[in-house]
Length: 382
Image (cartoon, rainbow, N blue to C red; front, side, top):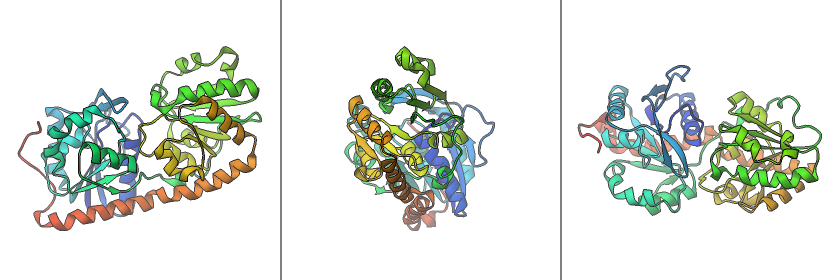
């Protein structure tokens, strides 16, 4: 099967959707399919062989963060040419409601189209207001996938229709074993965080407030922070007497990211909301890191309501500090959570998830196969 995947967000900036699309592409290739991915990309160097650049992206506020998107007539022309040359059996677009390549692909394509909805935005005025304008494009979608109940609810409430639930995937074996970073975790204990430093919804501020409590009580405790953003600004938010125990790695490559998960006694996911799944959480689970996470619905579901990770009250630094103290003081509890996390995350292994995605492709093909491959229609996007 020839499959065309469309990613709406720029490839160079780490994000859950980008990683989902890349991992899905590799899993589909492993299953024997032909795959091409179209994504915004500022540079055409060091790209995976399946990736086709749709040109530069521009930053746009979207879903509580700043997304780098690609739209306009030049982008539409590149989408049209890619679809025409690809002759795909199935076109699989991601986040088609975002003003970027996936929406453009829906406008110009004719043939079997599958869409995956990732976002969880329960009170999105912008999405609700734009629903009418999006409908002509979205009505061309033959199969819909939501990565979580929260994403499905957003789709139903704002855009109408329904979707098959197929969760995000994680390459479990990629994270299972790794050598800790030099000097970590250390005898005094270590808590880890991975995420964008400048997005308030990732909850780093809550963790820093909790560390202000814990760090004074535990003189050897350290905090390991990784992710893109202003590390100097993060350190300025830490009390001077605790600053030397907060280590900010900045953006890390894939190898050091895996090592970071294996470098801490407790991995903390203090997100405030807007998460439909939490790929970072699933990666940490794959690594067997004892998890301390906010009790937002998506995290509660993935962690089996606290069976595979300790849940604390979202946005509450004191409750986070209490949960961290409990885990740091009990190696037995950490070991139990580690085993439970490794078992729970197997349900999200890409070998399972990709097979479920292919089954969705197969449901749309019988209705459209007689029309031949996906083609680029004549109408221009509006």
